[in-house]
Image (tube, rainbow, N blue to C red; front, side, top):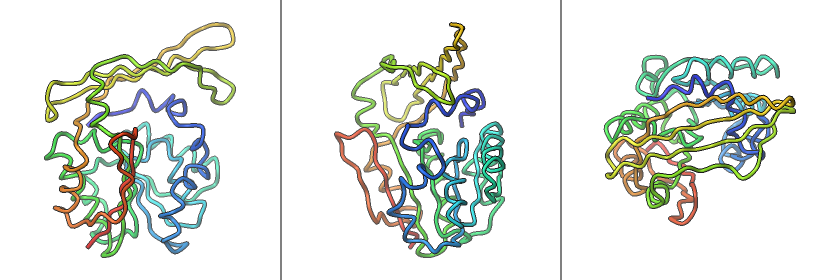
Length: 251
């Protein structure tokens, strides 16, 4: 699985304006959060820099934040400390989750931010989903967001350059995505993400990271969710939309 240790330092430039603060990030999931009691036990795996985890903690939930990247876990901890949020942090990849937590110990598990495609192939993705499913209590829910890979693959290998600078904390940066689309679905694909920070004196500092990914069709994801004991409750999948959210319930 890819690390994100380089991009962790500039990850705020990759977060949309609408989800930049913890409160805003959590509010994006209001429809599923309202299904939980205020003291629910929630896992945010692939937590990134912690916006969602800290937002959930701010709502009074008992939150655990995990990520395979040490740098991401560190940044999530820094954000929690800055905002006075109570949060447990664990560095763990998906397949390691059951080494740290008991089965059926969470009311809800979040796997958001287009992260699941970093699981290595169908086997790795199945292992990730099985780990997350095992941690849910019966009736608990997995909330997962994904790119629409059917669209991504149809566009082929390419360079995507944002058409405007992104401003964060008084600093500007240009965000660039370079896609390497393999000939076949089951092969390893790559995304190189570059953040070119432009300082006031004209200095440009570029940080980039090449990330491995293994795409999947929506139908394949639905089948794998079913295989690990999760029933799709709601889905926003649209083959013409850039991304979607799936909410699946532990049977």
